[in-house]
Image 1 (cartoon, one colour):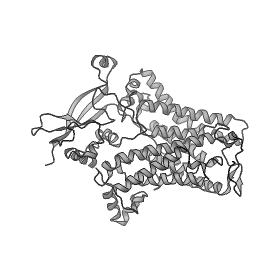
Image 2: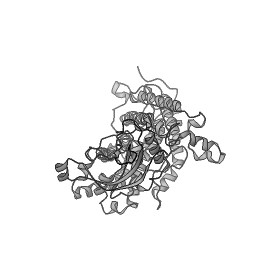
Image 3: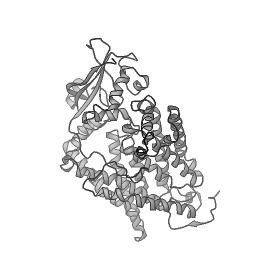
Image 4: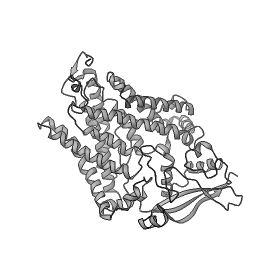
Length: 495
């Protein structure tokens, strides 16, 4: 059965060799949304719910109390529909169901407006969550997921080729991601310019993975090569993503091959980051977006089933062209920011989080300081036991686990505490929840040393952590070595 007939179609504006790219983009972005909604379902309520550490209802009430505050909050469904934990759960399950349907390819079987509505639902639902997520949703990959979800809405369905303008917008997004991150590094710490950044980063990154220690122990010349490779991949390669546009003037497959090679380099470097760290879905999203520049003629097109791809439906061409014009207008602040002396990192220039500025790790910390939370059931506080988190270092013998693309928000924020946020309101509330033995909060942890019993006291202790050498590991079986223990907060109890 051939594709449905449309009254009018437009030829010449279709990316006919990027059908495979669209398949990866639509299913990959939907898979990322699936992970994000599962992460929210598991963590939002104890962190931001009605009884969370930073209750979202309190934020919404504060915004609603004064008209001048209303524009301080990005668009969210919970401005019109009163927030409750049950409604948050319902939103998450709807997001999971819709994203799963796109992963298996069901909406793509219909006309282009069907997957469009699915992605717009995912986009608006997750934007509603990010808008009230406060510091727990203040990461660059949150706004990245919001933006990429909106772009994916206009990729179309199986009965027509991808619109060229939308594919190019994905290249522009990837360019901002990579080139923005590269410029942040060049303008940032000296360690990126003297090629020493990766001698520290594997050890001091927020959440090391199972291979981070092995990467850290590689020779210094290798780490210098990593930095050079990073600069090449982020500062030079992104310009070649646009090479397929030259096919308008240069005959033959060469321009598309150049774009494909550029995308492959981005994918390779991001895969190395996946293997050596835990950066939620940042690297996974970058890999998915990079597939937008990979052209595989004939793959994903109906010609493989004995049919020819017709042009774009007129209404779809008009809609995607309008999206392209809108992005062109909204991208001016992001383009200007790339070349600004005071470049902003992970910044949004509009309330809808479209055409954002991205970047990460402009500086690399040289030493790892970890905050360890301890509790005691003794009245005198003589014996202290450690709470263990799922992802951040604690037990020196435990191998770091791979969690990405899943996002452990509490563990990530714990990394920021030694950088000057040790008295944040959320951390104080977190310690109070431990004193109360609050079950939803304890469920976020790997180990409650008191098995649900209330401790009498809690305190926060800082240590300096470093990866063990090969000799230390052979001798003691430790993967971390910690020192310079210091009590920085507490002890205190509920009274």
